Length: 281
Image (cartoon, rainbow, N blue to C red; front, side, top):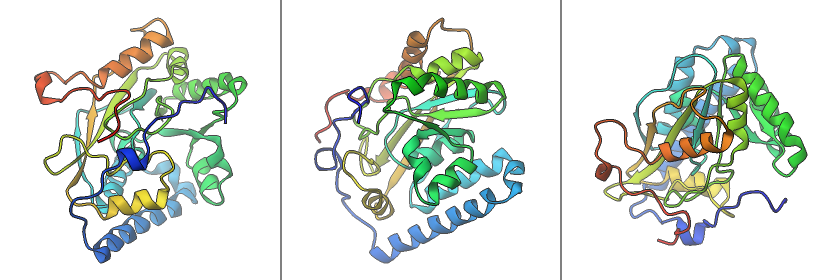
């Protein structure tokens, strides 16, 4: 792995809190079965030509259903532009982030190229419009940016996690700038989104985090067996095209938007921005 790739300090041992009151195993299994049914339905659609004619509203509702089927409540505030080229960017905590962003606005996801070579899943991802990036090859970055810009110019929404790695939710990383160059080149707005997970009365929960050496199976089971988990999706004010002259200032504006409360909401009601380094609970 290249040394320049972003790596979060978060690990399951130091950051991920155990559930205080897990649901019974049969109920967790039922949740996973419901998620599997929804995913299989999506696969059936992706494998047919009808996938290009599925309304965006249907995709958005399906995405919410996936998260709800896993036992997680969804609370969305704000809305993204419903049409036109748009770069959606968000902090990255969990595998749940992907359907949550799709619930805001269905978009072509940016994913690491290794996924393209996964059996079955890789082919389905490519057929579903996923854009792949070679994270360990700097020379490939201009081609990736060009592909993103082309998709944005055609009026598509593209979703990315500029931190480049998952964090526990109580800490966060800086936004990498490359994807923002695509928005500048395509002259499209950027839609910042803030993702946060809460459990019961706690300010922030790390139960949904998928970090470090955590396995997908362990993370999925932890989510399905958790009680009282809520995913909060805050759609921040859009950053209009042309507002910032370079990708550095555009990335900084999008990152800062995550910690700016929407109009009418006092800062004290949002909580403090999480530390960039403190992960231990």
